[in-house]
Every structure is written in structure tokens, then in C-alpha cells.
Image (cartoon, rainbow, N blue to C red; front, side, top):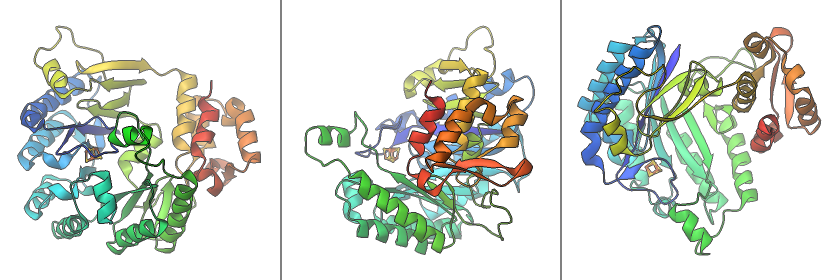
Length: 405
Ligand code: SF4
């Protein structure tokens, strides 16, 4: 089964740390953008050799909560017209929402349309930190948004939080995590702030107007959070992600029931189609990305090329690359090792590539196991290679060993 990702590159204001492909002050282009998404869905689905079955749909951004329910209805109709959807009980339809942009009637309409998971970009419960990040919401907006989401019938909520801010006090971070847990979301994503070039944060740091966040302090915050969340019933399943389980977990490898199915698809190196400006996709062995600018993206669907492009390429694609078997193996390791419980299955690797993981990466695995960064867990057909607890903080160094060449 395939996953669909939709990029919604509109924001009311650009946050000071953000380097995503998103634009403020271009909301007048939303109707044309929605029409272009519908055309892209039709174009890509018609070029597929067979009708595809979808099991996850994810609207990310940007701020997807800037589109109105009528616009989502239009997109959902196009999805249903051109793809088969898996059983409703299995379908995950997620929307990233800015807590400062939602209302109860809006969330109720989204739920009625079929969305069943919301991901709120909370980042912090500290008003001063939210101002520093230049977020448009305050902590009360979050409380309201979560209350409205529950009343609207959402039983699967994620809250995104950011730690390691410049001069962030660990006590303030702990208070943010505790506030988040008190709201009982089914899922929590904790991201370390990275200072990106080209952002106001990047410029302020370069000019000495803002200190570089202390990486050791950020590591302490991460470790404290992992322990706190575990003590409060959250199961870590990915380096930055924790989820609740609705029943007892029977094996070490199984994902908690509220793990994000859409993101699991990418970490398992499985296929997903990306729609919209700057969206990425991976299907039929090809990785591709769409043009970044909204206006250019929209224009590309006004006059379609005379010849049908080969699936999964659409007129919006600016980069595409066929993945060679060696690269696919490297990606499998780099993505799969992010999954802290599941890791990369020895049997799964052998089934996919007709060769053993240890025959391809034996040297790297041996060294990383000796360094205490990787471990083998389970046995027989359920044997997996995964990061150790110590390795969670050094994931990037581990991944580099597999993609170094
Ligand atoms: S709301 Fe999210 S996507 Fe938009 S500018 Fe802020 S961080 Fe970036």
C-alpha cells in the first residue's frame, strides 16, 4: 500500500527558526494551489500502471490548517476518485495544525471529512520562548485547540515540541514537557532546534546577537525527556517520537498502536507520493522532488506536456533519481535505524535484497556494535539491528557510516 503526502506551503508569519519551504503573505494563491493539487493527483494516478491503494494521507507544511474545509473536501474527492482507500479502520489521515489558526467548528468539519489524526505545532508552553521563536500562538491557544479537537472527536493527537533553544533553562523545558503530558496526547514529537542558514536565527547567531544553543545541555534535556515520557506511559519508537499503546505490547519490536503510520512508511523505506510545491516522493524506485515556488508549481499544471510523463513523475517535478540497489540498502539502514524498537530486520533485509545485511555492511556493523552504538535484538527470523540507548543521541554518526561512500 502507498502513502500520500501533501505539502501546504502557506504560513501567516514565518517563524524565526524555520527553513521549511513555506511562504507568508501568499494566501490569495490558496484556491489556485488547491486546483493544482487536484490536477497533480489526477496526473500522477493516471500514469500509474495500476490503481493504487492508499493507507495513509498526511498534510504537512507550512500550515495546512490555513485551508478551509471546502478546499479539503475537493482534495479528498480527487483522492477517492483516483485511488482506492484502505478500510476506514486502517486509514490514517493526518493534518498538521497551528494551534493559533483553528476553531471548534473548523476541527469538527475536518473530522467529518475523514481526518482522524491531528498534529499540533506547540513547540513550547513558555510564552517567552514562543515569542523568541516568533510563533503566532500562545499557551492558551494550545489548551483550547486540544479541548476543541477532543470535542470534535479526534482520538489521536500529536504535539510537536522543540528543545535546545538558545539560553533555554532545563527547568523551563521540563515544564513544557509536563504541560504536554498533562494534556494526554497519544503521540509526542520532540525535536532539537537546529540553527539554519538563511533564517533570522542563523543571521542573529552569525552576528553574535544570539548564542549558539549548548549541545550538551540539549542532550541532557533529551535524556531527561526520554525518562520522563517512559515513566508516563509513552513508548519511544523513533529517535524523536513517542506514542501511547492501547493494549499490552507483546514483543520488543512491535510499534505502539499510536505510532504515526505515515512516518513509519518512510522510515521503512516504503513508497509514498508527494504532492505540492517542494514535496518529495519515492515510488517505483524513483526519488523525486517538486518545484519549490507556489506560483511556478501552479503554472506547471496550466499547460500540461503533450506526452504523458512516466510514473511517478509529474510536470511539477524538478529533480528525480532512480535509486540503485546499493543506495536502497544504504537508505534502508539510515532510515530503519531511526526506529529505536523495530530497527532493521535481518530477515526483512534479506527478503528485500536477496543478500544478508552482514554480508553488505559487516565491517560497519561490527565496529558500531563494539562502540556500543548498535545492538542485535531478538533471534531467528525476528532478529533486528537497532540503536542502543547511548546510540539514540549519536544517530547521525551511525547513519553516516552506512552512507559514507
Ligand atoms: S508555522 Fe511551521 S512551517 Fe510555518 S513558519 Fe512557523 S515553523 Fe515554519
